[in-house]
Image (cartoon, rainbow, N blue to C red):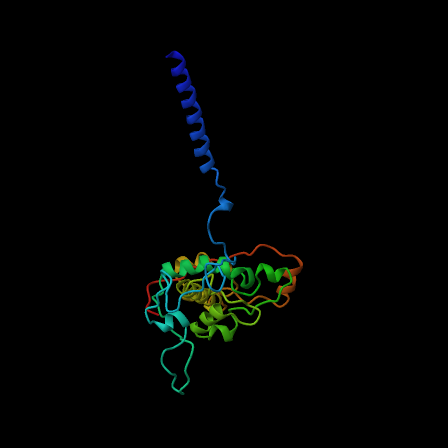
Length: 247
C-alpha cells in the first residue's frame, strides 16, 4: 500500500511538471511570431496580395469630418469675385481670432516655420544661416498685403522650395499660425505711438519712436552676416492688443 502511494505521488509529480512545461511553452510565443499583418507586407488572404489596405471610398477618419465650411478647409472663397473669378483666396479669417488662437499659432510657428522663416518672420531661420535658400520676409509689402487665404494655400499645398505641411498641421492650426504671422507683420510695421503705455515700456530705445517703425527693417548684408557667424534668434516681444474678433 505504501509503495502504491509513492508510485501515485511520483506520477503526479511528473504530471504537474509536464503541465507546467506546457504552460511555459504556451507563454513563450515571441512578438515577432504573432499572427498579424505588417505594413506593406504580402498576404494570400486578400486578392491583391497586399496586407496594407486602401482607404474605403466615402469613409471619413474620426475627427476629420468636414462640416461643409470650404473656406475653413481650403482658404478659398466659396463665392466668385466681382470680376467672376472663382477659387479666390479669402481675405478674412473664417474662425474667431482671439488671444488663445494667436498663442497657439505662436507655438506652432516656432515648431514648423521658424527653422526657415526665423522667429521674427524675416526669412533668417537657422537653415538659412547654414546656407539654404532664403524664403521671403513676411514684412515685405507684397506679403503684408496678401490675403490670409494665400498663406493657408501655401501651408496646405507648398510653394517653390517649400513642401506642403497638410499632414503635419491641422486646418485650425494653420489659421492659428497665420494669425500669428499677422501679429509679426503688425509688430514690424506699426509706429510706437500706436501702442499702449505699458507696451511702449517694453520697447528698445529708438531715436524717434513717433515716426519710426517699432522695429526698423534689417540692414542690407544682414543675411550674409548671419550665415558667416550665426547667432541664436533674438525674439523681440511687444505688447499687442488681442481681443476676440470674428475675422
